[in-house]
Amino acid sequence: MVVEMSAQSNVAPIIIKKKKSGGGDGHHGGAWKVAYADFVTAMMAFFLLMWLLNATTEKQRKGLADYFSPSIPLSRVSGGGNGAFSGDSMFTEDVKPQSGIGATDEHPTNARQAQGATGLMDASEQSAQEEVFRVVEEELKGLGGESMVSTDLARHIVTRVTDEGLIIELFETEDAALFEDGTAEPTPLFRDLVRMVARVSGTVANGIAIGGHIRSQPVVLAKNPVWELSHARADAARQLLESGGLKSSRIHRITGYADRTLAVENPMRVRNNRVEITLLRK
Image 1 (cartoon, rainbow, N blue to C red):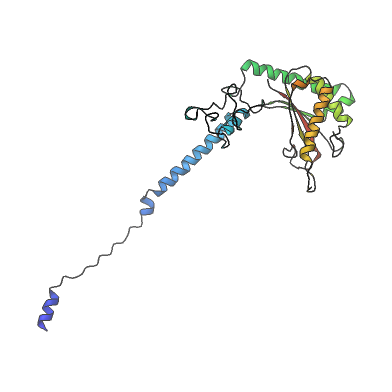
Image 2 (image 1 turned 135 degrees about the vertical axis):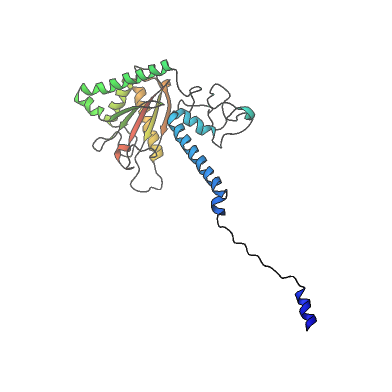
Protein backbone atom coordinates (compact mmCIF):
# COMPACT_ATOMS: atom_id res chain seq x y z
CA MET A 1 0.00 0.00 0.00
CA VAL A 2 2.88 2.37 0.74
CA VAL A 3 4.63 1.50 -2.56
CA GLU A 4 1.52 2.32 -4.56
CA MET A 5 1.22 5.71 -2.91
CA SER A 6 4.81 6.64 -3.71
CA ALA A 7 4.36 5.62 -7.34
CA GLN A 8 1.40 7.86 -7.70
CA SER A 9 3.24 10.77 -6.09
CA ASN A 10 5.98 10.64 -8.80
CA VAL A 11 3.46 11.37 -11.63
CA ALA A 12 3.44 15.04 -12.72
CA PRO A 13 0.07 16.71 -12.32
CA ILE A 14 -1.92 17.46 -15.48
CA ILE A 15 -2.68 21.17 -15.85
CA ILE A 16 -5.50 22.28 -18.19
CA LYS A 17 -5.32 25.92 -19.22
CA LYS A 18 -8.45 27.57 -20.62
CA LYS A 19 -7.98 30.78 -22.63
CA LYS A 20 -10.89 33.11 -23.05
CA SER A 21 -11.04 35.10 -26.28
CA GLY A 22 -11.24 38.84 -25.94
CA GLY A 23 -14.18 39.16 -28.43
CA GLY A 24 -12.66 42.15 -30.21
CA ASP A 25 -11.60 40.45 -33.46
CA GLY A 26 -14.61 41.78 -35.32
CA HIS A 27 -13.70 45.36 -34.47
CA HIS A 28 -9.94 45.13 -34.78
CA GLY A 29 -9.88 42.85 -37.84
CA GLY A 30 -9.48 44.02 -41.45
CA ALA A 31 -12.60 42.58 -43.10
CA TRP A 32 -14.64 45.76 -42.62
CA LYS A 33 -11.95 47.81 -44.31
CA VAL A 34 -12.26 45.75 -47.49
CA ALA A 35 -16.03 46.17 -47.50
CA TYR A 36 -15.73 49.91 -46.88
CA ALA A 37 -13.18 50.28 -49.68
CA ASP A 38 -15.54 48.48 -52.09
CA PHE A 39 -18.36 50.81 -51.04
CA VAL A 40 -16.27 53.94 -51.57
CA THR A 41 -15.11 52.67 -54.97
CA ALA A 42 -18.71 51.96 -56.04
CA MET A 43 -19.84 55.43 -54.95
CA MET A 44 -16.96 57.06 -56.81
CA ALA A 45 -17.87 55.13 -59.96
CA PHE A 46 -21.53 56.14 -59.54
CA PHE A 47 -20.78 59.86 -59.24
CA LEU A 48 -18.32 59.62 -62.13
CA LEU A 49 -21.09 58.10 -64.24
CA MET A 50 -23.51 60.86 -63.24
CA TRP A 51 -20.96 63.50 -64.19
CA LEU A 52 -20.23 61.78 -67.50
CA LEU A 53 -23.92 61.65 -68.43
CA ASN A 54 -24.28 65.36 -67.69
CA ALA A 55 -21.08 66.46 -69.43
CA THR A 56 -21.52 64.61 -72.76
CA THR A 57 -23.79 65.08 -75.74
CA GLU A 58 -26.26 62.54 -77.08
CA LYS A 59 -23.88 61.66 -79.94
CA GLN A 60 -21.00 61.08 -77.53
CA ARG A 61 -23.15 58.84 -75.33
CA LYS A 62 -24.18 56.81 -78.36
CA GLY A 63 -20.53 56.47 -79.35
CA LEU A 64 -19.58 55.31 -75.85
CA ALA A 65 -22.45 52.82 -75.72
CA ASP A 66 -21.54 51.40 -79.13
CA TYR A 67 -17.87 51.26 -78.18
CA PHE A 68 -18.56 48.99 -75.21
CA SER A 69 -21.24 46.94 -76.99
CA PRO A 70 -20.37 43.21 -76.85
CA SER A 71 -21.62 42.75 -80.40
CA ILE A 72 -18.73 44.75 -81.83
CA PRO A 73 -16.52 42.19 -83.62
CA LEU A 74 -13.02 42.18 -82.13
CA SER A 75 -11.10 41.28 -85.25
CA ARG A 76 -8.43 42.50 -87.60
CA VAL A 77 -11.01 44.30 -89.71
CA SER A 78 -12.98 46.05 -87.00
CA GLY A 79 -12.02 46.23 -83.37
CA GLY A 80 -13.97 49.24 -82.20
CA GLY A 81 -10.84 50.61 -80.56
CA ASN A 82 -7.16 51.22 -81.19
CA GLY A 83 -3.89 49.78 -79.96
CA ALA A 84 -3.85 46.02 -79.51
CA PHE A 85 -7.23 45.64 -81.26
CA SER A 86 -5.87 47.20 -84.48
CA GLY A 87 -9.25 48.83 -84.99
CA ASP A 88 -10.52 52.36 -85.31
CA SER A 89 -11.47 55.08 -82.90
CA MET A 90 -15.15 55.30 -81.99
CA PHE A 91 -15.14 58.83 -83.42
CA THR A 92 -13.73 57.83 -86.82
CA GLU A 93 -16.09 57.93 -89.80
CA ASP A 94 -13.77 58.28 -92.82
CA VAL A 95 -12.21 54.82 -92.50
CA LYS A 96 -13.09 51.23 -93.27
CA PRO A 97 -16.69 50.71 -92.07
CA GLN A 98 -17.49 48.45 -89.18
CA SER A 99 -19.09 45.11 -89.96
CA GLY A 100 -21.11 45.18 -86.73
CA ILE A 101 -23.07 47.88 -84.97
CA GLY A 102 -20.12 49.77 -83.58
CA ALA A 103 -19.34 53.46 -83.82
CA THR A 104 -19.72 53.39 -87.60
CA ASP A 105 -22.07 51.38 -89.78
CA GLU A 106 -21.61 50.62 -93.44
CA HIS A 107 -24.29 53.23 -94.17
CA PRO A 108 -24.27 55.47 -91.07
CA THR A 109 -27.01 58.00 -90.44
CA ASN A 110 -26.28 61.44 -89.10
CA ALA A 111 -27.80 60.48 -85.76
CA ARG A 112 -25.47 57.49 -85.27
CA GLN A 113 -22.19 58.83 -86.59
CA ALA A 114 -19.87 60.90 -84.43
CA GLN A 115 -18.98 64.44 -85.41
CA GLY A 116 -15.24 64.52 -84.72
CA ALA A 117 -13.12 64.18 -81.62
CA THR A 118 -15.60 65.94 -79.35
CA GLY A 119 -18.89 65.03 -80.98
CA LEU A 120 -19.55 68.76 -81.53
CA MET A 121 -19.46 70.93 -84.63
CA ASP A 122 -17.22 73.92 -85.08
CA ALA A 123 -18.50 76.94 -83.18
CA SER A 124 -19.27 78.94 -86.33
CA GLU A 125 -21.04 75.99 -87.96
CA GLN A 126 -23.06 75.35 -84.84
CA SER A 127 -24.06 79.01 -84.66
CA ALA A 128 -25.13 78.93 -88.31
CA GLN A 129 -27.24 75.84 -87.72
CA GLU A 130 -28.92 77.39 -84.69
CA GLU A 131 -29.74 80.46 -86.78
CA VAL A 132 -31.28 78.27 -89.49
CA PHE A 133 -33.45 76.49 -86.93
CA ARG A 134 -34.47 79.79 -85.36
CA VAL A 135 -35.61 81.17 -88.71
CA VAL A 136 -37.64 78.05 -89.47
CA GLU A 137 -39.27 78.12 -86.02
CA GLU A 138 -40.17 81.79 -86.44
CA GLU A 139 -41.72 81.14 -89.83
CA LEU A 140 -43.78 78.29 -88.44
CA LYS A 141 -45.01 80.46 -85.56
CA GLY A 142 -45.54 83.47 -87.81
CA LEU A 143 -47.95 81.57 -90.01
CA GLY A 144 -50.39 81.42 -87.09
CA GLY A 145 -51.36 85.07 -87.51
CA GLU A 146 -52.24 85.02 -91.21
CA SER A 147 -55.73 83.48 -91.01
CA MET A 148 -58.00 81.33 -88.91
CA VAL A 149 -56.96 78.32 -90.94
CA SER A 150 -53.30 78.93 -90.12
CA THR A 151 -54.22 79.28 -86.46
CA ASP A 152 -55.90 75.89 -86.60
CA LEU A 153 -52.77 74.45 -88.20
CA ALA A 154 -50.42 75.99 -85.63
CA ARG A 155 -52.16 74.23 -82.72
CA HIS A 156 -51.04 70.90 -84.18
CA ILE A 157 -47.34 71.84 -84.37
CA VAL A 158 -44.62 71.60 -81.72
CA THR A 159 -40.95 72.30 -82.44
CA ARG A 160 -37.86 71.51 -80.41
CA VAL A 161 -34.11 71.52 -81.06
CA THR A 162 -32.08 68.41 -80.22
CA ASP A 163 -28.58 67.15 -80.92
CA GLU A 164 -29.93 65.63 -84.12
CA GLY A 165 -31.62 68.74 -85.42
CA LEU A 166 -34.91 70.68 -85.38
CA ILE A 167 -37.87 68.37 -84.80
CA ILE A 168 -41.22 69.55 -86.20
CA GLU A 169 -43.89 67.44 -84.53
CA LEU A 170 -47.34 67.21 -86.15
CA PHE A 171 -49.83 65.64 -83.75
CA GLU A 172 -53.50 64.73 -83.49
CA THR A 173 -56.03 66.08 -81.03
CA GLU A 174 -59.30 64.63 -79.77
CA ASP A 175 -61.31 66.68 -82.27
CA ALA A 176 -58.92 66.69 -85.24
CA ALA A 177 -57.24 63.62 -86.73
CA LEU A 178 -54.27 63.57 -89.07
CA PHE A 179 -55.23 60.27 -90.74
CA GLU A 180 -58.39 58.32 -91.34
CA ASP A 181 -58.96 55.98 -88.42
CA GLY A 182 -56.75 52.88 -88.66
CA THR A 183 -55.30 53.82 -92.04
CA ALA A 184 -52.45 55.81 -93.57
CA GLU A 185 -54.85 57.97 -95.61
CA PRO A 186 -54.10 61.63 -94.75
CA THR A 187 -56.90 63.95 -93.78
CA PRO A 188 -57.13 67.44 -95.33
CA LEU A 189 -55.69 68.80 -92.09
CA PHE A 190 -52.53 66.69 -92.39
CA ARG A 191 -52.14 67.58 -96.07
CA ASP A 192 -52.23 71.28 -95.21
CA LEU A 193 -49.78 70.79 -92.35
CA VAL A 194 -47.22 68.92 -94.44
CA ARG A 195 -47.49 71.35 -97.34
CA MET A 196 -46.84 74.21 -94.94
CA VAL A 197 -43.78 72.39 -93.55
CA ALA A 198 -42.57 71.72 -97.11
CA ARG A 199 -42.90 75.42 -97.96
CA VAL A 200 -40.98 76.49 -94.85
CA SER A 201 -38.34 73.75 -95.25
CA GLY A 202 -37.75 74.85 -98.83
CA THR A 203 -35.89 77.90 -97.53
CA VAL A 204 -33.08 75.73 -96.09
CA ALA A 205 -30.99 72.87 -97.45
CA ASN A 206 -30.81 70.53 -94.44
CA GLY A 207 -31.50 66.84 -94.80
CA ILE A 208 -34.79 65.51 -93.48
CA ALA A 209 -35.77 62.47 -91.42
CA ILE A 210 -39.38 61.40 -90.96
CA GLY A 211 -40.72 59.30 -88.09
CA GLY A 212 -44.23 57.92 -87.59
CA HIS A 213 -45.72 57.24 -84.15
CA ILE A 214 -48.93 55.42 -83.22
CA ARG A 215 -50.87 55.20 -79.97
CA SER A 216 -51.34 51.80 -78.29
CA GLN A 217 -54.49 49.79 -78.93
CA PRO A 218 -56.96 49.38 -76.03
CA VAL A 219 -57.16 45.63 -76.70
CA VAL A 220 -54.51 43.02 -77.46
CA LEU A 221 -54.56 42.09 -81.14
CA ALA A 222 -53.22 38.87 -82.62
CA LYS A 223 -51.63 40.89 -85.42
CA ASN A 224 -50.86 44.37 -84.16
CA PRO A 225 -50.62 46.76 -87.14
CA VAL A 226 -48.75 49.55 -85.32
CA TRP A 227 -45.40 48.86 -86.96
CA GLU A 228 -46.70 48.78 -90.52
CA LEU A 229 -49.12 51.66 -89.92
CA SER A 230 -46.56 53.98 -88.32
CA HIS A 231 -44.17 53.44 -91.22
CA ALA A 232 -46.93 53.87 -93.78
CA ARG A 233 -47.93 57.19 -92.21
CA ALA A 234 -44.32 58.39 -92.23
CA ASP A 235 -44.08 57.43 -95.90
CA ALA A 236 -47.34 59.29 -96.61
CA ALA A 237 -45.71 62.38 -95.10
CA ARG A 238 -42.74 61.87 -97.43
CA GLN A 239 -44.98 61.76 -100.47
CA LEU A 240 -46.76 64.94 -99.40
CA LEU A 241 -43.44 66.71 -98.78
CA GLU A 242 -42.20 65.77 -102.24
CA SER A 243 -45.47 66.79 -103.86
CA GLY A 244 -45.12 70.10 -102.01
CA GLY A 245 -41.83 70.82 -103.76
CA LEU A 246 -39.25 69.22 -101.45
CA LYS A 247 -36.40 67.47 -103.27
CA SER A 248 -36.42 63.71 -102.70
CA SER A 249 -32.62 63.74 -102.26
CA ARG A 250 -33.02 65.67 -99.01
CA ILE A 251 -34.92 62.84 -97.34
CA HIS A 252 -32.41 60.66 -95.48
CA ARG A 253 -34.62 58.16 -93.69
CA ILE A 254 -38.20 57.14 -92.97
CA THR A 255 -38.86 55.27 -89.72
CA GLY A 256 -41.91 53.72 -88.10
CA TYR A 257 -41.66 53.74 -84.30
CA ALA A 258 -45.01 52.03 -83.63
CA ASP A 259 -46.15 52.75 -80.05
CA ARG A 260 -42.67 52.49 -78.52
CA THR A 261 -42.02 56.23 -78.08
CA LEU A 262 -44.83 58.06 -76.32
CA ALA A 263 -45.53 61.78 -76.27
CA VAL A 264 -47.74 61.55 -73.17
CA GLU A 265 -47.82 59.07 -70.32
CA ASN A 266 -51.10 57.41 -71.28
CA PRO A 267 -50.19 55.11 -74.21
CA MET A 268 -53.75 55.17 -75.61
CA ARG A 269 -54.13 58.95 -75.86
CA VAL A 270 -54.57 60.24 -79.42
CA ARG A 271 -51.79 62.74 -78.68
CA ASN A 272 -49.39 59.84 -79.34
CA ASN A 273 -50.56 59.73 -82.97
CA ARG A 274 -48.02 62.00 -84.58
CA VAL A 275 -45.45 62.42 -87.33
CA GLU A 276 -42.06 63.98 -86.61
CA ILE A 277 -40.23 65.77 -89.43
CA THR A 278 -36.63 66.48 -88.42
CA LEU A 279 -34.39 69.03 -90.11
CA LEU A 280 -31.03 67.33 -89.61
CA ARG A 281 -27.89 69.15 -88.66
CA LYS A 282 -25.33 69.31 -91.45
